[in-house]
Length: 437
Image (cartoon, rainbow, N blue to C red; front, side, top):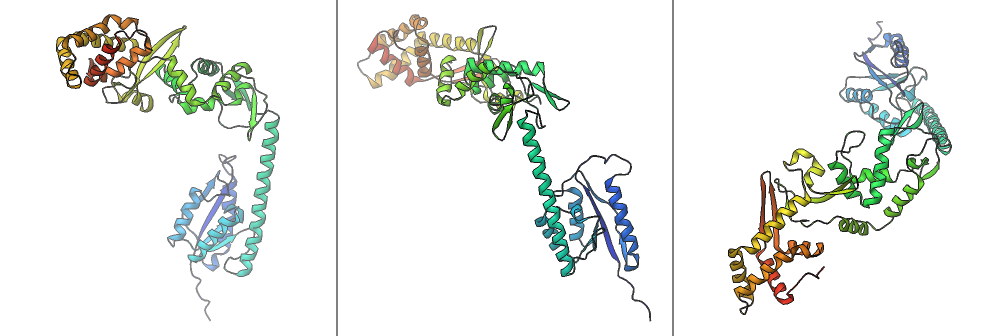
C-alpha cells in the first residue's frame, strides 16, 4: 500500500529583536532564531514543509505593538493565501501582548494557517494547544509588565537624584557622558529671552521681535509664542530635574538665576489681557489696523531694543507665520511710514478740493455750516498737530484714514470722508483739541 503524498505546506519564519544592539554583527540574534526555525522546517520535510522565499525580520521593534514592518508584510501574505505555517523561535517573538496575540491567532484561523513555536511544542489547531499558548503568553505579558515597572522605578529614582535620563535636550545645554553641560552660545540666547520678556511682558511681541532679528530654535525654525512659553516654564534652567510635575535639585548647572526666574513668573501669573494691554501701551502705533502689505495681508506693529534704543516696525503677518517669501515687503520702519502718512494727511487737509468736498458733505448734515468754517477747522489742525498727545494723534489718524496699501515703490492712502465731517464738527464745537488725550 502506497503512503499518501503529503500536501505542500508553505512555511514563513518570523524573527524579532527588541533592541538594535548587536544587529550590526555578522551573526546576530535574528540569524540565530532563523537558523533554529529553518532547521525545524527541514526536519518536517516529510510532512511537506518548505520555506517560502523572503525574510520576515524585525530588528529593534518591541513585542508590545503590532506596528512592525516585517510583521505587516507577513500578515499581508497570510491574507493573500501565500503562507500555510508561521514558524517562530519562541511565541513572545511574535507578540508579548495577550490581546494582540489573540487577534493574530484569529487571523491565522480564518486563513487556515498553523502557528508553530520551535522551543515550545504545540499546535494551535487543537484546544490543548490553545490552552498551552494562552498560559505561555500570559507569562510573557507578565514578564514584560514587570520589566516595564522596573524601568519606570529606576527612572524615577534617578530623576530624584537629579540625574539626566535622556529625552530632548533643552536649548542652552548639551549632553556629554549622560550629563547636561552648558552650551555657552545657546545659553546666551536663553538668558536674552528671559531678560527681554521681563522688559516687554508679552510673548507674542517678543516672538515677533526675535523673528525679525533672525533668532531661531536649534533646528533652525522661527521662534514662536508656544516655544517661548515652554522655554520660560522649563525649570531645568534654574538647575532642577523634573519628574511627573515634581522638581528635584539637578546635577547640572543653572543658566538662569532665581531672581530673574521669579520676575518672569510674576509676569506670567498676570492676566494675559492685562499683559497684552500693557505691551500695546508701551509700543505706540498710529497705523495699527490700517496698513496692509502688497499681498493684501495686514501689517502688525512690533519693536525691538538695541543698545538701549527702541526701534519700531510694521511687519507683514504672513511673513511671521508662513515665511519671508510670502511678501515682497517684509517690514517697514514705523517712524518712516507714519511720517509719510501724517505729512500726506496734513497736505490733504490744506487742499482746496478736499475742503470743498468736506464742506458739501457736512452741509448735508448741518445747513448752517459755512465753507469758511470748514476751511478754518481743517487748517487749524495742521499747526496744532505736533502739540497733540500721541493718543489724540492716533485717534485722529484712525478717524481720517480708511486704509493704507503699501507697494514696493510707495503707498496709497484712502481717506474716510465721514471721518473728515466728524472731525470738522468736533473742531468747530471745541475750538482747540490740544488737551484731549
